[in-house]
Image 1 (cartoon, rainbow, N blue to C red):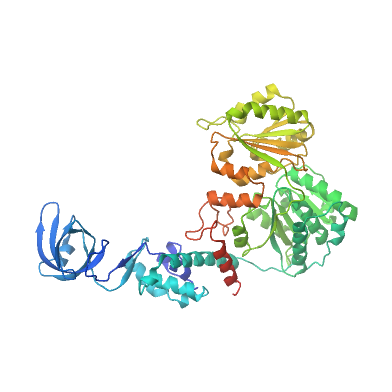
Image 2: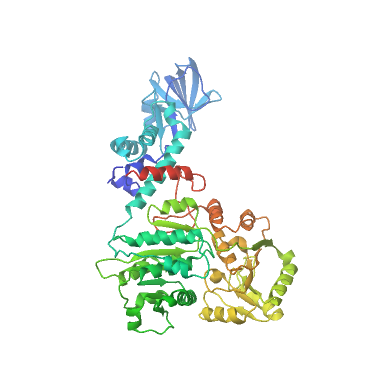
Length: 587
């Protein structure tokens, strides 16, 4: 593709010839002359026979030579240029649609016998067509496949009706759009020097008291191959809730010999620290916890084999590391991740970089992302989850209470997630402030916390040890491991994205026990919730989420909802994506 430096085109977001070719005409005018009325706007060879003016309209009497009939043209606006164009005895070509034996506001045309594209852009027709002629050619659309380039070129410069066949144009637009996107993503790939590490994870894997899943072993081996190379590895590891990402992190730390893991909360950092000591301590690994409350010295930082911490890591004098891992990577900004990388380099080489996320993504997005970074998916779970999901309303409240009482009697815990902390008018659901009194009155061991609560981490730790019911917001989505949690109730469930619902549901039954997820809603027939309730597979739920709300922009690092593509459909065009990736691999 050719880069375009043109102020008019750049202003409307067109920077290369593929993007220019992707401006589809809103319609094509058929300016061929036919000896009959088609019933659509068409071209005529006409002679002006008479003109009749009144205060409101001007009527022009035409003799249509090609169909040998007389017809009236009706003009509601008849300006000076009309007078210079339409006068008695004038022969010309006009275009319009015949309705009730008249043509409303016919327009003069200069060329016949061709198919003319009509565009809707901020640039006027004449200027835009001139820009198309200036920049667009089949050759300028390289490296698109020749067939796709030809379809797009002749969409703008059609020779016949074959060139404007909707089906093939739509395919070409989808292919070119995703190809252009992937090409841009690929150009963002940067190659940096890194220290190659020859590592064997077998000793660590064999030391575990249980067998890893095939997916865990596959990803560990991918990381082993990554860090062997003298160029910086950049890989995103995406695993469903409970798929065992922590053990992949620890295997990576074992291979790296000198690494750091950054977690979004001190609770998660503490949990990782406990797990690391349990599985790496026996190999003599020195592990240091770096949070606002943990105690450590500069010497500890220098001599550690593994640093585990929160964003507090960013404010330390860190040693050179071979590997950096970021857990729940979407919770950190790009600047924070870059800061950590910069802090742990010797100025000559960068550490290998691995991001971990518990938010499964659709296969389409994984394929798109893989043009920018390497992507690993952990789909297999160490044990099959047994979680029952029920959609409930006010009518089911008594049954819900009976269930909660039974679970507490069995020494299990319950989480109730409210959509808001404080009361809000016209919201339709209670907030924590409105709902907490009921639970405090009828149950013991009730704990309350939310995102703005400065003591939320202490509350969660105390609840884990002593509590029966936790009243909270979605702050529980990523956080403390609760071994006794078997039930979660999500109030106003239809207001949350499916990915968030899946993360919340994933908090229960983490240790193989039977789990329950109640989706409390005023919209019992909600299709999204009904589909969500049918599956526990996070990757299938990600596909559903994409289907219901579309994906976000990966180039700018935004994976929230919002339209990214005009033609390419991430829910339906996986085959086109695969073909575009294959073609891209040739360059």
